[in-house]
Image 1 (cartoon, rainbow, N blue to C red):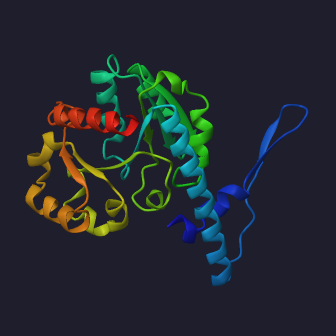
Image 2 (cartoon, rainbow, N blue to C red; image 1 turned 120 degrees about the vertical axis):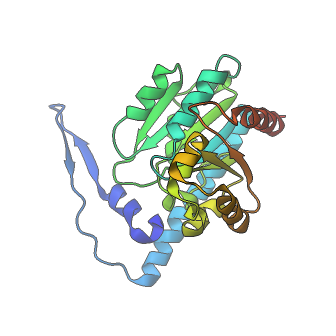
Image 3 (cartoon, rainbow, N blue to C red; image 1 turned 90 degrees about the horizontal axis):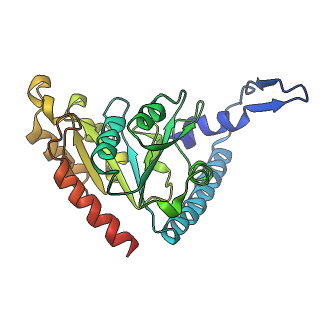
Length: 256
């Protein structure tokens, strides 16, 4: 987790300065000596406690604006951007939506989503391997929430660190691609245990990659019995109608 690997500390130690000339430069973080275990525990609690408070503030703010928020998490390459792109292509004419995209570098995904007509805000995290509630609070200020019904958060591709960080979402959705292997939930149980919904993606290539659906569903039932499961293909649209019905119902119930 980030709270033990130290990426949060390294990121916050890097500074960007602007001089009167307008020239920008960065100072690389100084080497951080290995902390004493008791000190590490203090830092961990401080980081997570602050994030929890800000996440609850976000949740109340979004509720006041009648915006339904989904946090999409997965490993890199599972199809988060394609999934969101399909949803905007199919439903944005009916449902006002926007997306906040998190990546370590580049705004490639946000640009791609904008081409599909989506309102997209990019967060580049540098070497931070997850999004935090404070980042979402700042990014959401760039959106007209009064005009939205649904806000998507495409989290940084990572099945470890983001599991520990509540962003103030209504629904945590984990995407699980058929290309990743049936044992992915067993390898990364914390993430799957934190999900209310699990979406199995790329089902159009199940046969090509030899994905064992029965074993995958068994593993999901073992690790995440609380999660509702959908099987979809963003490419062909298979399974998307069931997802849309669930999405509409969830959004309606959360803001009513």
